[in-house]
Length: 355
Image (cartoon, rainbow, N blue to C red; front, side):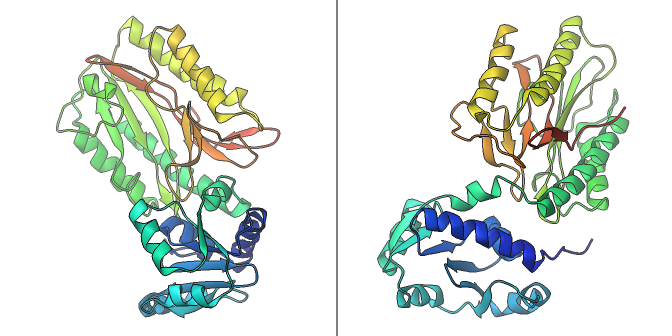
């Protein structure tokens, strides 16, 4: 699969949104260094970008200026591309009349270093995280394509999981299938999650050289990455005959996922969604150990966060997961997860599997 080129028109729309937010925040400039944020604005994940009201400059190494020339040479490409030389970005900023410069949320040491070398007042903020939370039509197209690969990967897992299968063998075949279908990386970059029996109670358990036993539950959490955009889904599969309690909880968690998706609406507080799911699980006599969901895009975890501490409000064209789960230490775990595109009048479950 060839790496997709994000059209200049799409990049201009993103810059327009950022400039509008900059103006609202009283910022004359915004410095972007985070890999995914640079990718979002420029179409490639390399370099340093400076956004001004009437200009946009991208500094990259000479090698990448040549390697990515097909992107940077597009008609009406919104950035002036310059070679990354020592202190080039700092010198450029200090020559411009910038009083307030927005910078991404960076570590304390990085912030102190920037503060020493730059003249403008630095304003740490997450404007791009907020903007990236709502997706354009182009992004929704990429996310749907990524989800299609993930669903085919999950079907492959269904076909392989049985009594006597070894966890690592299943993962190896599923990840190979996902890559062959067009995923740029293994699921989540460092691989999918698969755990059976007692291990399934570990929320982030990795596959082991362990045979899957009859009567056990297997949690499979996987996704893909297509043109930079991730997908994420989880299913819990019973192997053979499982106990009455496990069967009842499987149905409960699966239904809770569906009910929560049906209940979602634009304007809801993300924390309220989490509170509702948590309350339902607690009524069953269990604790809920993780957030109800997370945004998906150029990062596998991004805004919005559907957790108890979240201040996010659900908006049209946000893309996020819904993933209730119940975990019994030394027993088993159950989780079902889908990725949702939230529309004004309807929800689109892009990881829903037919049959």
